[in-house]
Image 1 (tube, rainbow, N blue to C red):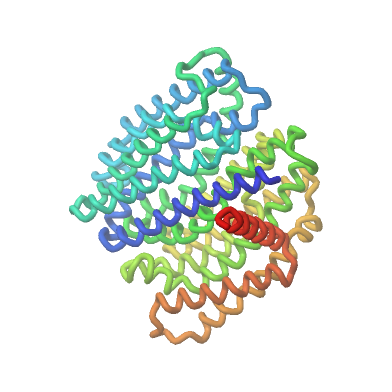
Image 2: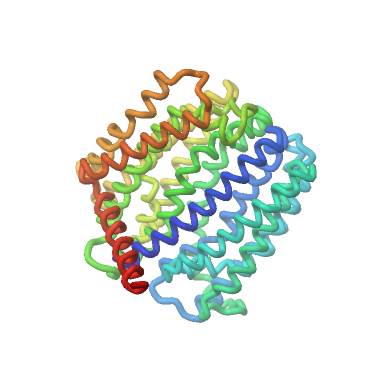
Length: 490
């Protein structure tokens, strides 16, 4: 259990460092670049993100969940990663001009061609991150991702100040990839091979076909709003929607993406009968209890304080994304109950079920978005809400069928989180209803956030939520270390 908490600590440290650097970059670049300029890069990044799912080809998941790894399997994983990534680099290069023509945006050609270079670089460190996650070495992962974000921030801001427009973000992405590659070579596990091998590629290919199919469908669902908005509404509207998504993704960057790298190998270890008492399903229930205790108060606060938040972080030219944020907070709050389900399914050998779920949910989302796009961005936002509610229902059906987790079991795990959300809602709801409109945005945001945090902390202990035990344990550890230091100095 101590090893798990240690892993969570460094995973959260990594994500918060990346998040902080990302917020700083966003605050600066949102004032240096226009929505139209940001939209060009955003569209290119979304298109490349679809190819990134195929680039991994399930190698990362294979390395984490495989029970026994040897040199043959590792060399086969390296060969698979090299083959797929370099093929994709060629595909993106060839498709850059046709895609630019399809979207009526000539600038997109150069953006895609430069971003394709990432596919050439990434395979040299493709095995490092999943192996570090398998070994729960999150301190090394922290170094890799922090280097990427720091270099990305520095290059983007410097080039934007020099008037490089949207290209500042493209060059920054490439510079960040180079930085993470260099650091990954320094912390690379010794057992990883330097040369690829063909033997065993078939097994990885069969696993990767399912993993990639599900991941590609899932990523297509994530990218669908941007791709549809970019084509049917316009580049500037795409940038506004992207900013709204960026605000919502603060939770994913700060919480979900910090928890998922730890819980996936933890689910897998419990499914293999390792890592202590209790199966993967029990770990899942505790995980969603933590997740909703954080997510529900966060998204309620965000919906109420979207206006001052956008003013502070992005500036007045981005106020058009405020109603989109308020609408889509609902879908993010609902889906937080099931965001960890895919890791449970994969870790317990139910990958095919996850792929079918992703395909069904992705198809529903695309259909709803295509129907909503002619009516504008607000309609698209409501389509996102409805698609995520339906996806949550599909996830619940899979949990009940495959893991025997019905609504009564889930309700017991979530009831304290719901009460905690009610306790935490007092300050943001009061601020939304009664705070004067001429209140300075930073003062309104900071003051409400502080009161909400204090109410949330009080609720954690008054309701005796599971998170209270984690806080008390952290407090005892910090007190013990302080006493040890004081005793040593004395």
